[in-house]
Length: 239
Image 1 (cartoon, rainbow, N blue to C red):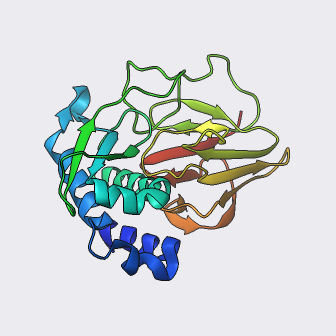
Image 2 (image 1 turned 180 degrees about the vertical axis):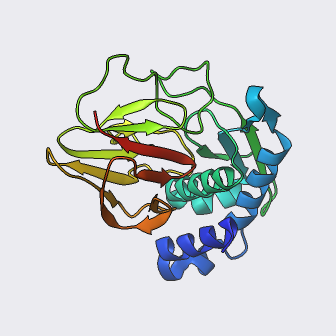
């Protein structure tokens, strides 16, 4: 199933039986998502090391009639479009600065059924090092002190301590370990540590969680096991 097909299915579930009625005669979300994908393709920039940077902020201008009709659903629609675009970017292995953001605005002068997409590379969230693009790893440098207990080690060498109790990994602000990988959900996976055993539980993420190449829901881990979420690999090591 393509990214656009998944988007339409998610929207149908979100708006239940009102989906076709809501978007009949107005601009369709899949058309907007397709235009956003083209904008990402158009604005690709190759960085050092061969990484490809694409815009993370997309402003959607709708015609006044379409904007007025969709205004009650604008926030939910923007969120679904952002998630769809993040999946598209992740599947292509591209890099962005921070989260993918979608804003829906009123476009004066546009006729009904018309829309305009503007894309740009926006600054990272406050507190994040803006000198480096992000597609994996953490928000900020690794802890310079050797951590105690289990640690998760990213491919770039960054280390994340696994605390006693539950540790949530994701892109969102509620995650204890924040990984700005566009293929990772805001609350993607939970790592539990009881002092002896480490286990991993997928939190209903969009793209799922792999441990040693196998898709998992909940699984116990041993040192050397590898968690794959989005395009990020984390290897469990004893502290």
